[in-house]
Length: 134
Image (cartoon, rainbow, N blue to C red; front, side, top):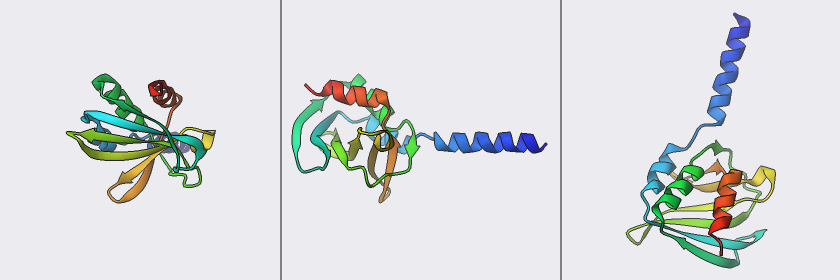
């Protein structure tokens, strides 16, 4: 019985760690475009070195799914490599910052209900974001 309780507890802990953020997915999945700002890569936001606009619906849905994939604890010491600005009918519906350098700094961060929250930036998300840059 004791072992069963430990196994159930471990499963609950693991499932809570990998919880997706369905609210952000719902919010950005129906966007009609995203502007991606690429910063100079040293963690600061002061220099945009490239901007790409994505309008392809399949790519937008893929990016939305990757952004919402897994909630993580926000790491405020990481800085930023860029930002995503999701649009619907020429209005920004969500701004999301991202960092993709270093194992402990691979995340998206954004405001949700007035609080800064974060989701994991997977290697697949990093590859997709880098593929948009020309």
